Image (tube, rainbow, N blue to C red; front, side, top):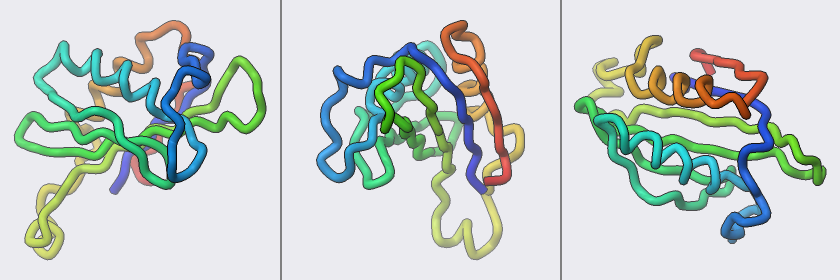
Length: 132
């Protein structure tokens, strides 16, 4: 199960992002900001890296590891940009076979990320999907 946050904002300057060499999709600026916010918690994360669907970081803490991905829909040059952030909990093959360590509806990392996003008054239209 993947948890997804979607929102709109003018907070991040996509023109200052490193170009994604795989696909021209933004996401680095959000993840850099999120990393700084996560440093204030018990979670640590890697530097943002590219994927064909956007950008991602690996986040560790609370006895779990996660992939947090971000992508911005910036096809039209408008100040407000639509964002999608997805949170996947890493699970071993054994975990998957035995149905263990699934992402809980009230996952602690996802709750922190949701709180971070909701607390920024420049971010609007926050929507949550815990069954993606």
